[in-house]
Amino acid sequence: MKDGRSEQLWKDYLSMKCDQLLAAHHHANVIFS
View 1: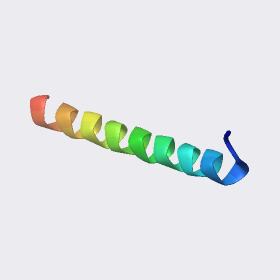
View 2 (view 1 turned 60 degrees about the horizontal axis):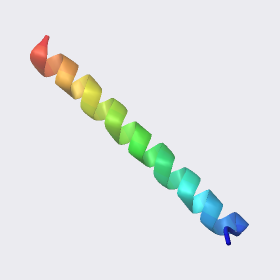
View 3 (view 1 turned 90 degrees about the vertical axis):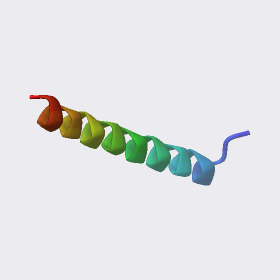
């Protein structure tokens, strides 16, 4: 069962991962452009 706290942690985790992917993508664009 998901409670409110674990769902918030999950959202924080996903947003952190998205930020990392965006940063890595931007970094790759800088390197390869």
